[in-house]
Amino acid sequence: VLSQGADIATLQTQNTTKMNALISAIKAAGVADKDIQTQQYSISPRYDYTNGAQKLTGYEVSQQVTVKIRDLSKVGELLTSAAQLGANQVNGLNFTFDDPTELQKEARQKAIENAREKANELARTLGVDVVRVVSFVESGSRGSAPMPMYAYNMAEKAMDAAVAPSIEVGSNDLISNVSVTYEIR
Image (cartoon, rainbow, N blue to C red; front, side):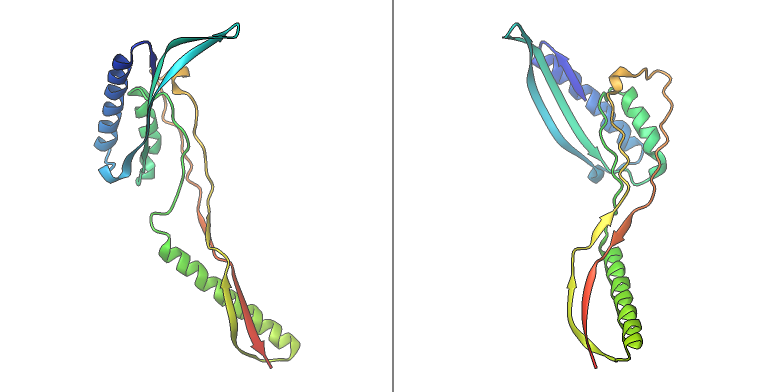
């Protein structure tokens, strides 16, 4: 929520009222406290620069929260609700894994199996036998995910009859890169 005006105390009150209503609505929609985190709170002066002169024209109070929405069917509804409750800036949707540990293990296991299959296939082609693993290096497991971005200034849009945006979640992939060196005979 970004509030602009001349009096800091008034701006803080306006900003806090909007943000508190927004957070209450988010919680009422089933988002847990642990999934709502204040990321930024700032008070900044606003200036007008005319003819090389700087003139104080007011202040901005800005508060940003990050919300983890586990029920993806509620994302569009919550974005619309946020705008109707006074959120005038929404930036970036990110789709992530809650706990990628088991998925990373599975990806690593599949990469190792793939390396073993390739080594055995090459050994057969070359007429040699794979004896044992000499070395193993994992060069960084990483997630590869589509990152749809939803970012615009909601204050510029008419929100009275807003329709919830369609949020497409796509799919996320975890990739494990391994290098296995085998001894052959």
